[in-house]
Length: 184
Length: 144
Image (cartoon, rainbow over all chains, first blue to last red):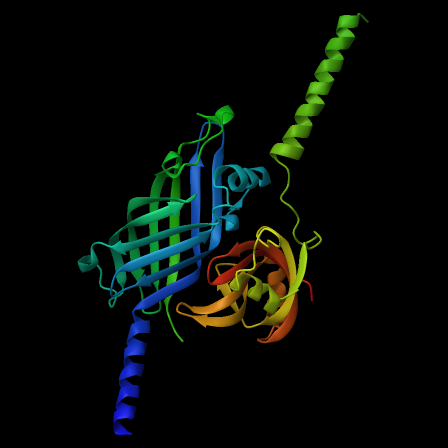
């Protein structure tokens, strides 16, 4: 009986510790922006899933492409049907790791510069990326922010011939996620 | 008036009308009014969740991009800046609650104070799809 109780305490302690190291959100924000000669394109997604494991430095986010909202309906249609083909490729994901963990103290409030390396999958194409950003650590949550650029051609997103040169070939992606400790 | 003048004025008029039509009704056409649109599917929250979680979202019945009206018991309400998200929880996964997440149209936020957990409500919104843990609905309105 004593052994069973001890095992239960150890298991619960391990479980609690395991959870405390993981932070997540399901309401993260990702927006993208491009400023081409013909069109300025901007869209926002407020339902991004993201998880950070502060012990291992693993950082993941996942986005439903159809959740991006554009100012113009026609742009949104073109984005989903012609560019990212969201019926065929409904998600974009990033799976990476913090490569400068020594520079970040997740137990101490403050803003820390971070470098995250990993693989970004968009339009069914996976490419290695290296992003710079910040983690703002507070007693309640960790806010991760990053701004980086990607080339559409790298992800086999083709620009129709009629508008080639008029739409930017590179877009700026802004990630802003408030991660709360995982609780059960 | 000479024939060529009539032809020129007619052509210009047609061109201007066509331009106005393209500009207002194609280039700047308004977003679909999800709140007023008829739903493509009507479901219970349980069936909607089971549809995706059991891998039944196939070409024959695909809810991605559809307007869905569903009824169920709201578990909790989350805030993201000024947005409100109604959450219907059906499962507990490695990363916490799993279920249906509905972002309300801002003018429906006023109905939030009247909601209590486990209250049955009917929602209509645009289904963005399933991300492996949750079904995401946007531009949602509270029907009753």
